[in-house]
Length: 329
View 1 (cartoon, rainbow, N blue to C red):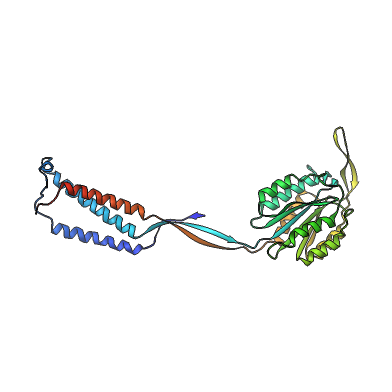
View 2 (tube, rainbow, N blue to C red; view 1 turned 45 degrees about the horizontal axis):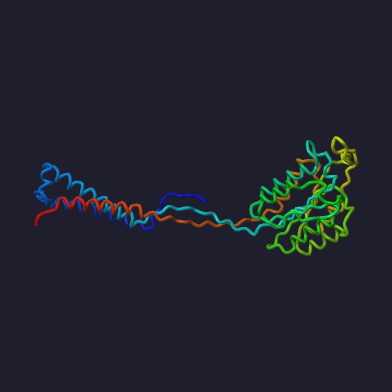
């Protein structure tokens, strides 16, 4: 909401102010040659008392008339309100929570920590999009259904931890769960972002079958393969000092992820480090940007009561002085 200057609904009323000089001239021509009082106590105050009272009455009359004109002009303050209307995008974020996401090839943090940071940046850039958060490993679970409550989503992303679900990588189950959240979403734009660092090795649903079902509902899948090329330190157990890491080859089924994305009209991206992952989300953001239509309307606050009140006070002041000085017929 932005505030503008004061406006007048009937500005033509200010023409009436031109009548004041006319009244001044007529009053001067009819000015009485003597000042008379209704009470001798007023006269006793001094010879100039009547002149001062007359001048004060004249000023109060002008103030009352001028204030009345301003009130008739109807001053009002304006507040311009931007009303943004947008269909918004329905987005399902499917995040791999398998133990391999703790691999430390995205230094200074592991894959999952960096992925969570990029997810939060992506969510923070949303305005009217509905977002759901799905976590998958050997099983899949909806963390947050479609919502525009971004603080809740941010908190849910912070709470994502490897080990919350049965270990493994059930990509097909993750896609199916996310698609189930999107299929009845309002609007025409439905997008799924699947982020994983492995090969589908769990779950009863084939990723291709899940992707074909998603395409029936008009869901476009963007798949992101997370992990460096070559070897990476991957946790293989826990010892007295914490996790035990072992260097293992990075295996991401890029052919599968490319096929899954392509059959739905989406794309596959490879993120080899945190900076690349940020660029991937920025690219998806540009691909899915929609035109936002906006309209504005103006709210008014009427201010005529202020000059009207001032005019009434001036009029009452004149009546008070008139009670002390009155012409004798």
